Image (tube, rainbow, N blue to C red; front, side, top):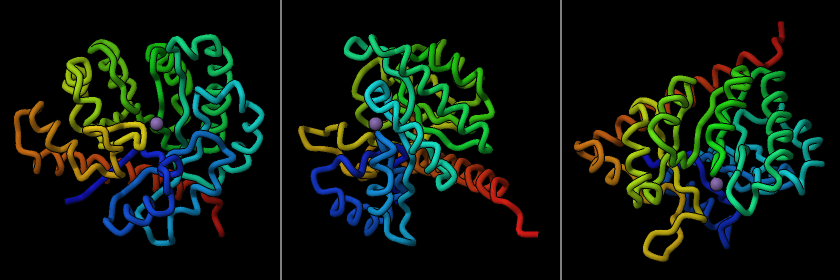
Length: 257
Ligand code: MN
């Protein structure tokens, strides 16, 4: 089975080195997202050369107000990465008061990505999905947008699809009716697996990177097909997105000739 986890916080597990090594041994394709630019270098070091782990440069919206000064470091590190995340907006009650600052930080990040040729970006959107889409619509050259745990209504999902967004979904999202309805509305050729580990739990146990492919089974029930078909579809989607990211990366490299 091809295990893919397009949004996982390897550096936030109790034993990051052991978790990364296990994921590597199991051959899981991991997008290892980070929450601050300061965390990037240490987190990137968890991925051994030749592993299937890719590290994304992030500045989480819940930390954006406190860590805004780290945008300097973000800018410095950006040329080294193909992937950006976790970034975005959080309009839920505890973070609503910083939403304006979050938007300024995200605007800067999207601007930097656009100015340096685009990136593949994993985005958080809790309580601010329409506002996030407004910002993405305004800066399409920032790259390819992957909406993580995008549990919103059908109209918003259709809007995101029209904007060309991708979606990463985990089996925790499928535990709720609203989450299942959201996943049903997503275009099947733009869905990827994620865990959001270690924040997502399964029977009281933290989900490990790749989550043993549980998301395939959960989505299969929704699509009314076998889990092998879901796995094949999501693996194909993943390859397409990675190829687009790599092509983009090649185009950015200064030519030697
Ligand atoms: Mn996350």
